Image 1 (cartoon, helix red, strand yellow):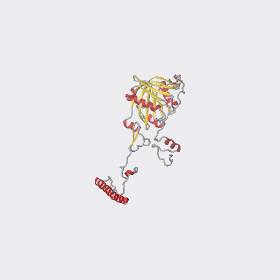
Image 2 (cartoon, one colour):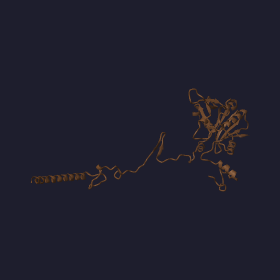
Image 3 (cartoon, rainbow, N blue to C red):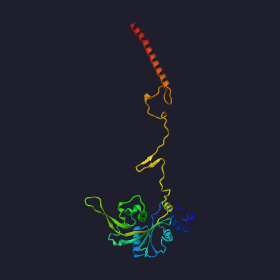
Length: 341
């Protein structure tokens, strides 16, 4: 629903002066379903040729939801996060990759996430070995721009170590792309595999190639490395507090499924509870049977006839039958006498 320019005072604490500024700020307002997480690639005060190529290759994987900044920034995220916070707000990016190079920390790469344009968590990695996309003979157009990759994390460290788990979460946020309910299998054309072994993370990117299989209608799946190929070592980490992480993972009320009364869901089916009033069997409509029909003169009662009333009616019936039998015996001689005459 569009809002009038005259009625708007501030958006996110900022007052728009033109219609164009109003539309720009409205797009950046918090939404129930957020946009795709964009990433920015930032260069530090000094970078090496390897770090420049690493940032460029990661930028190629992240496109089109990525911003490549060419200017060198003097402030480092671990020492002073204000520069990253400012750039995150300016470029509307919630992910960042920061590359630096020095004698103390050669070929340094920092991957991190932001929440409300403030650094949420980040992890510092050292690049020990690197091969760019250009060094692989696979077709550069093997994967379409913006397609969703598959992810494989191999190694027990991704299950039991906190820093490795954070690394896998950041990688998933970086390259997962648009969230969808349905996926076209033909669009799954590349896979990112991260393997942890002896304190090193081997980041590999493969193209999924479907080839003909002899004697089968199903294709044979093969992986061809297409780059980049990066060997990483974890150096420093900075994680968010529990309160900040809880706020970043809060789900809006509009998205939460509404609870249905008296219905519970299990892993197999839905179970419902039905509440009914107490039934009165005397007033309940049932099938009419002649044998159960009451005769005239019989008294009705809620719980049926008592034993005394039942005995009284039985005696009355027996007396009636006896009287009827005496009448028949009294009439029989007179009829015979008429016949003899």
